[in-house]
Length: 124
Image 1 (cartoon, one colour):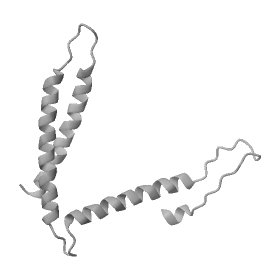
Image 2 (cartoon, rainbow, N blue to C red; image 1 turned 60 degrees about the horizontal axis):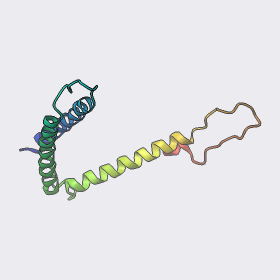
Image 3 (cartoon, one colour; image 1 turned 90 degrees about the horizontal axis):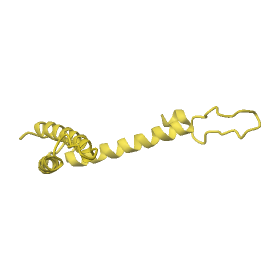
Image 4 (cartoon, rainbow, N blue to C red; image 1 turned 120 degrees about the vertical axis):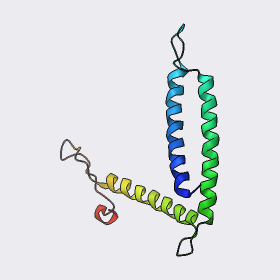
C-alpha cells in the first residue's frame, strides 16, 4: 500500500468511526417499550472492527513516515512533528492577538479602560 492510499483509507475510516458514534448515540436511549433503530451490540462490534483497522493503518503510515527521508535529511516524522508544533504556535498567537483587541463594552467614561499589552500587528 502506498502512503497516499493509506492516508485516504485512514481519513475514510475516521469518518466511518464518527458516523458510528452518531449511530450509537441514536441507539443508546429509547422510550420504554420501543426498540432502538439499530442493535447497539452489533454497532459496537462494527466499531471494534473499524478501530482495529484504524490502528493498523496508523501503524503502517507511521512506519512509512519514519523511513521516508526528505532532501534536507529529516525524516517525514520529524517534519510532521515540526508542522504540528508550528500549527499549535500559530493558534496560540492568533488567540492572543484576538484577546488583545480592545472591546468597546464600557458604558461610560468612568469605567475602567483596558489596553493591549502586546502589539497585535506584530503578532499577526
